[in-house]
Length: 189
Image (cartoon, rainbow, N blue to C red):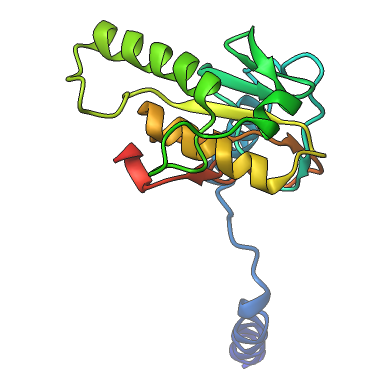
């Protein structure tokens, strides 16, 4: 009888402590997931800024931004540069008057340089003359630049055939990258 009593006690104890039984945990998928996360974090963080900042331009700060792609750059500092070539002085651009009454914001000298660049891009890519240039252009403007001059430059860009315009800023902090600040219709239409 003692054997049957001991067996009953053992069964009760086993039932009470069954919930504390150690179960096996497969860590391989968890480790694989963490390795993937670390890999993507490191590879996306090392891309950095790909477009060089135009000399003489102090970009404004931004807490969210995407890495700059290699693209045509309009630098606006003391001088206005297009692809590294000085087009005109910023003061001259601010003081210039439009030669087209229908487009009062147009900056004629800048328009000529931009139209030339747009036409060469269209020719290189086989785009019709009446279509916009299928190339992104980035504005790197000094953070002290006036918004009215920036608006005139952006209108001049649009008139010259550039529809995919982005504004470059210096990324600060460790924020998650977001989409670049696009000006104009989505998709460059």
